[in-house]
Length: 394
Image 1 (cartoon, rainbow, N blue to C red):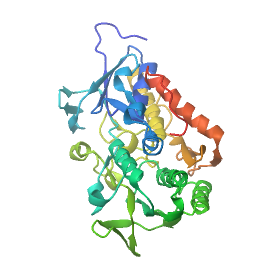
Image 2 (image 1 turned 120 degrees about the horizontal axis):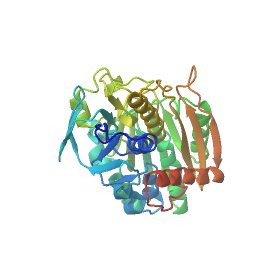
Image 3 (image 1 turned 180 degrees about the vertical axis):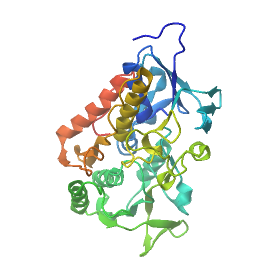
């Protein structure tokens, strides 16, 4: 279906080219060819899978080798622009960037979550994180000189991206230190304010807790580190202080400042953008939010942003074509979990399609490692012309 030349083509503006933004652009390119103009905006010049940061940290991959340039996007009808969003007015759908301004027919905010390491006193001065590429590189360099001692791995606040990630870090660090011959003189301890690793899946939680125990890694659920003493290398918790030689933290997450200033977080859970969990629509007509910045009742992970993008694409298409409203957002996705030694497990989560969430666990195997590699490869083929190989252990 094409629009006559004298008819204005509606515009969809997508802010953020992560999992959700890329998949939304791909869906609109497929479902509304020639019927809609899609502008995809991101401050960065390339995309990196979140799990690839573990490759940088533990497998000697360079940041450049895991980065996919937005120049290689292959989505007909989609225009990518590298710009910094400076203002969002959801009432008028007016967006200002460092280069221009927009008034789209549909606005989708997919700007993800920022990190606030300063929210935990002492963490900036004496802690390490691997949720950013820069942080992963810095921690990798620190580990190269680490010769044993006490390592604390701590979730500093919830929610946070990729709930299995702290446990993946612990198991891959165990593997690295064992390979280097210094595991026997290293004590490892994982702390989290959560009562279990993956609350929605008792089987997954049990598998992770067992895996930590088998590797001699201490685990303290329901225990949050609320401050570090950089001078004495002490982590403060509500049940006592803990000494460390290396502190690795999952930093506090927050919405980007431009989102907070927009008013979109009013009435949102815990300071995130308030959305209708069935449609991902905000209270403002024509404005949606997907991914880590939205308060949809699902974990913050790329697969759920991807699922949300498909829902929003279907709703936009229905509105433009005057067709019946499509089905609700189901909150479904498969999360792969690194166990080390070339083994990957999986949890298949379904949060919203039934009366309660279900998330069965699939035990780790080399077959799932290959499946994870194919998961990444299919996204590269779908979104980019760059056909490089992405490791299954990433």
